[in-house]
Image (tube, rainbow, N blue to C red; front, side, top):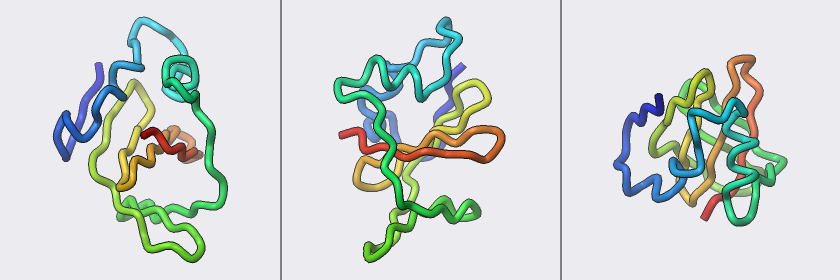
Length: 98
């Protein structure tokens, strides 16, 4: 089951349609296959986990808009169309999905 909290379905656009619960792969792999540009992690961000705020050197903080639970992964939609896949082991990646 996919559960969205915060924001609106319009904030997510077609991103949830890239996920198939019958596919055993995680969100990252499914995004890589179904998103027209694939999944390409963008290095250099740091994450304030308590406030769900991304920081990139020299840029203003980027705040979360909404979160989606996909199985045991947390997918976070941030301002400026940044999407993060956060794993249960607290590893994460960010990709721009515009």
